[in-house]
Length: 290
Ligand code: NDP
Image (spheres, rainbow, N blue to C red):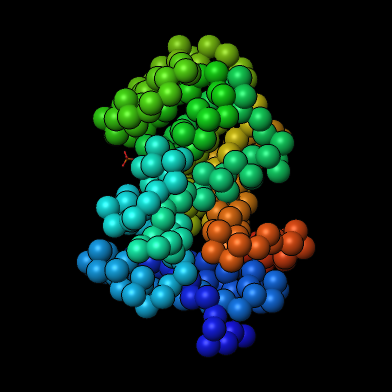
């Protein structure tokens, strides 16, 4: 329920029909008794005018998703330091004269690692992917003090570009093409204590039988695995770790939304409300076999 005084927020992107954010944000507001509403806003073109329009219509905040997380930066009046470094924004907050941009994806991932008791400090990290999400993973691992990071992507040029863009080089960074990584696995990974992040779209519903790397030896060399995909809830990548610690992207999704909600409403969410939304998300995401 909301009144004519409600804070209005929304989701901009294309496509957004499958997004769980409107449901999630709706529950946050109703459970917290906050007078706000969150609406889906499919934007097929002219992002600049869409953002200007949302400001004129009095929107308090927006989430921004595929394909606009980078482009939207051009239309902001201000940007949070960490979002600027990553070069991607997923949350906009109304300020005087326009919107300020934040990246709550990285905050969500950080919180989900903390919840799972996965520490990155002084650890050897492997990241698959060089798209928008992988970029957030890379920045987080640098910020959290990883000892070394190996970035692996199908298109090696994209991986190299991500590495060159990084300002903080206080970490040993290497990039490999997926093909070379698979062929040279033994040479590239001399140790047995890596934390692996899967940040490509490989294995995402409906292509649930796909896996970024099939070689059992790879999984034997890892301590833990993080797949930022949340549907299916257990990807083949996660299954390959057998009994080792693995997490999916559901908590990242949950907490990026929670942090956005808190920025818009200037209220801290109750833990019970967050738990309730997690349960709702778990019910909605598909199992690999379903
Ligand atoms: P992008 O389109 O920016 O990047 C896609 C990545 O996947 C690229 O690295 C691409 O490699 C790789 N890739 C795609 N197909 C293949 C393939 N067949 N073989 C090898 N590599 C492949 O997407 P995003 O970075 O935005 O998203 C990636 C994943 O992360 C998605 O599954 C998304 O659902 C998930 N995600 C989860 C979030 C969460 O809250 N849990 C938040 C954001 C994203 P190449 O560069 O060579 O094309």
